[in-house]
Image (cartoon, rainbow, N blue to C red):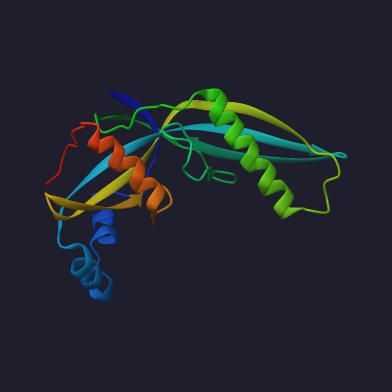
Length: 187
């Protein structure tokens, strides 16, 4: 399937270094989880929103992306980021399951929390405008498969932020894998 994604600075080599590092952290990972026996690039669908906060002549703009797989993943802030898109052909995509209304409500809730935590005393009666910028945007992630084929553990690397992901992301990916999806390039 042809998808639209952000250009990622993380290629297979960078992901491999993060997922299977040398040194003490790599030794510890192999001791706890076993050897990495494969890795694959996957894409997770997000919706990108432009949020404007207005209050007493003050306007702030923020770009937040919300996953449309479960709606449980942390929104990603793309404010101040040059948004460069790329097309990509792949079958390793998680399906969208959350409606646009649900992701819109999620991003509005997150924007309110951010606004009030950053400027608790500045806002008196803010209003929020939420505009959908991209409805079918896929973000790249790399999965490292550890252990053996009967007892698999996942470690997930974010191809945009260049960070390792936590448990919520692993739950989403495991559910997708258990639903019978086949991951390419497992070797």
